[in-house]
Length: 124
Ligand SMILES: [Zn+2]
Image 1 (spheres, protein in one colour):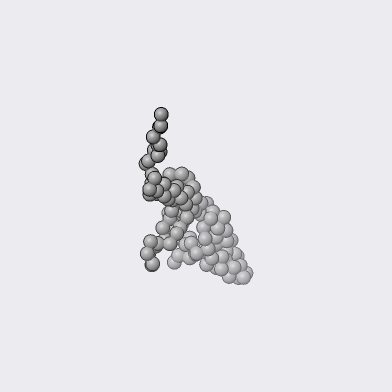
Image 2: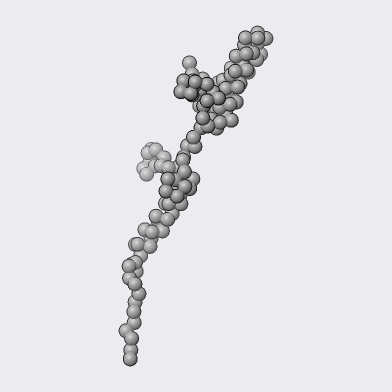
């Protein structure tokens, strides 16, 4: 059975209410696991067992990777925006690169784009 971090905290709270020493040892481990994962950036709804199976113990679990990694092009923080159409998943974009691309599109779609200058004939 896999429990979330929040479930582990609740289980630990329940076990501390018992006076049996075995339950207190289990509760101490549950608290250690939950607090350690929360400190590493995991959320209360994240499951503990998959992390334990992958890394062996809680102290070996790496910090939770950011949900939206930085842009591979400019390094800016990426953001999630709505899908292209209703009910489509959110898209993760770089606002910096998107703004620069839009600036380029505006520049290239200008009627005067590519015209060097409007030279006036020189009168002698
Ligand atoms: Zn970027």
